[in-house]
Length: 188
Image (cartoon, helix red, strand yellow):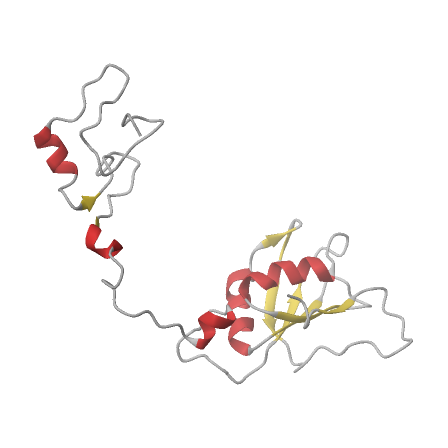
């Protein structure tokens, strides 16, 4: 980085010229934006910008933070919610007020998958504006319900509540399904 301007900026070198004919920051002004050993943004306090966050350079020294430990949930790639692990309860959601012209099991899998692991999705055969979504556990179901209920999807306000069903049943062998029920439990 040769210049501190709107195209390039070295936040550790506030003494660099701007490259557009404007003088670089005077030493007292540079000190106001950051002290040696601290990285900060020259936009601190400017309208429309968040305040600067300072990082001591010592944090970049290996071993300065101490040993890092990984929890089993971090290793498996799942977010742990304190006090909610293995939460007993219903993991099946009843999703209502869907737009039957656009909704698919895969679409619901993607949408609800933001909030946890989706095991199964079933769109009701006789009432296609309703669906059952089975999450991995009750905490994931609660999280999805809290975030998605009341959101607009394909022009309709989605409603998600806990279902009376404890699991989504797959269609029996040879039974007509029209692709309305999908098992995603082995999905990566």
